[in-house]
Length: 301
Image (cartoon, rainbow, N blue to C red; front, side, top):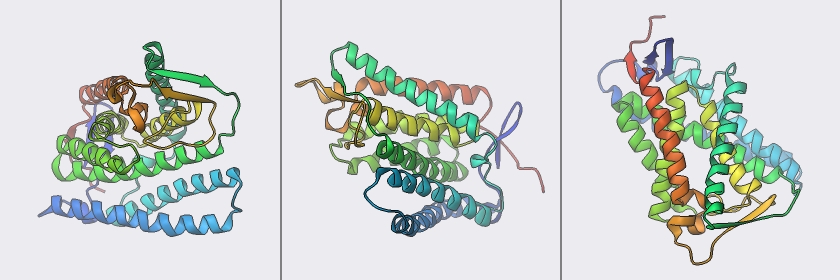
C-alpha cells in the first residue's frame, strides 16, 4: 500500500510477499515487524564487533569510522531484508533525495535545540559556559549511529508496519509510546522524561516521515538534535554525556526537573516539550493537509 498525495504516491507501507493483501495481514505485519527488528539487530551486533576488531582502538577518529560504519551496516541490512521480505526497493531510504533531506533535517534539528537552549538561558534555567574548540569525533559518531539506527528501527520498521497493520493513528501512538518507554532505561530517566521523549521525538520524527515518505529528514533531525545538545552546548543527552564539547550547560541548582529536564537533560524539560511538540504537530497537520494519510492501492506490477 502507498499513501497518496496530490503529486503521487509518497509513503510506501508494503503490499507484497509477507505483507500481501489477504487474511491475517495485520498479524503478518506484526510478526514481520518483530522479525525485521531482530534481523537488523542480528546483522548490526556481529558486524560492529568485526568492524571494531579491524580498527585500532583508543583513537577517537577510528571510533568515528566505526560508528558511521555501524550506521551504514544497519541501513544496508534494512534495505536488504525489505527487498527480500517485501519484494520492493525501500523507497523510504532511496538515495537520490538523501543529501537534500539530510541537510534539511540537520538544519531543523540544530535550530530546534538552539531555540530550546536559548529559551532556557533567557529564563535563567541554564548556565552555558563556553570552553572553545574540542574534538568532535566521539560526539559526532555517537549522534550519527544512534540517529540512523533508531530512525530505521522506530520509524522505518515499527511505525511503518504498525501503520500497515492498524492505520496511522494507532501507529503513531504506539510507536511514540515505545520510543518513550525505551528511554526509561537511560540514566536519570523518569516517567515525565519518557513522556517528553514520546511526545517530542516520537510524534515529531514520525511526522517528518509521514510528510516526506522518506527517513532522511527524521534521521537528520535526530542526529543534529543529539549533536547540538551534547557537543555544541555540552548538555546531558538522554542521561549521558557525548564526550568533549564546545561548552558546558548546567541546569540552575534548585530548579524543578520539569523546568530543566533534571539529570536526564534538556529534552525532558517543558521548553523542549513545547518547541518539539509544536513542530511535530505542525508537520503532522501539513502531512494531513497534503493527503499523506489517504490510502490508495498499490499499482500492479
